[in-house]
Length: 258
Image 1 (cartoon, rainbow, N blue to C red):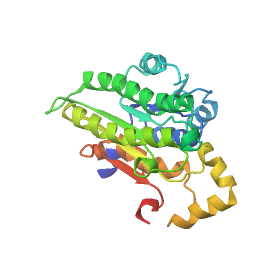
Image 2 (cartoon, rainbow, N blue to C red):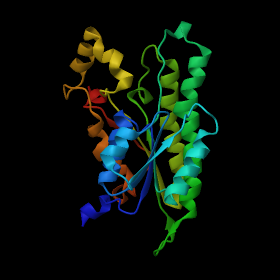
Image 3 (cartoon, helix red, strand yellow):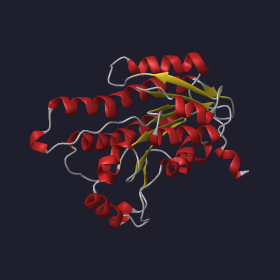
Image 4 (tube, helix red, strand yellow):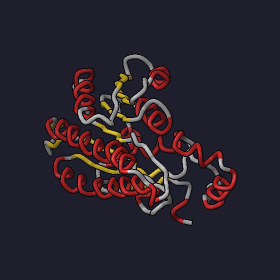
């Protein structure tokens, strides 16, 4: 049955930035598909835990600004669930300033969270994934890594140099990782959300002129919601996408096609 390919029962997923917004929405979607979920953020994931329920969700408090956070997150996930099958690198930050005024610390902070921590978590997860061979004729391992890119993985943006650079790098790294891990049965893909109603876009949505300009370009005519990523996330986390790797999938209401 085709629907069985989307069933994640028995799988373990790790979602970063899971306390709210897109991360919370994807954690919920994965849990609804049957996965057990470890969710991490620099603030408690209490609301997400309440939505998913005890036993199926484990909250990990960690700050990806700290160099040792990726390994400690992986260690706690393995201690709690014993394995990892799906990694969703969702956590990200953004800093805004004119290019000629943009500070070095803002550059470093964004690169640390959006790119370096993503790389280190992916590396740690891949080591676990390739170590667990799935019994069967092919005797291959199984794993899914989903990176959260951005429309600015395709476009330049304005006043967000470090964010644009990091998300462009996420798209490139997704392809590189896909090339190396595909022979082991691990697929690596990315989702590029469009303009979503989250904390990162609060300032834009509060600006009547900028908000109107954005909505006029989106063929769907609305801001996206965390639930809009659910289908793409479950697809890329499931056996239904076993022959899909190295792509960055826009979920943008048609923005890039305009």
